[in-house]
Length: 114
Length: 114
Image (cartoon, rainbow over all chains, first blue to last red):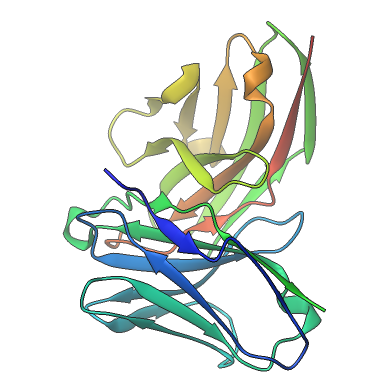
């Protein structure tokens, strides 16, 4: 049973560019959450998608946007990249009606902004 | 609002010694509490979670944690450290809404010496 798949694994972008990160949830999961983990820090919640809508959002600027597709996969888009956006971006999937927050995390995408 | 404080950014133990990683939380509502482990260049793996059943929670790889409401603590322990336990450990809290966002601590790097 496949877990959470994220692509690409590594990415280098130039300041000011735009980037799209992708996530395929664990089979049977319908909810996708995104987290940003800066070097030496704990992950920080960006937003969560369920039924193709953003359900919760953390304290991130509008440059961060997302999308969920009918097959439950998700994209994270970041516009006008800043050096401070360099981080490991983690996707976590879960099943909404199970509750108790049983998240499964992917291995992440390492974004470097130069 | 919720927050997590992990006491000690680095903990070093000898192989076979007791592992104790400290976590204190702040939450205005009854929380769910989690411990995750992260190996280098990997995502997060759930060790254990507290969701209001028994206050002593047993997880994978011999780890356990005890929820102490009066102390607002959820410390992680393992009786005997193994070299393979060397990793970074994160404590996290969420509210009890289905798929509530996780708020993570800063992490504790565990080093195990032979």
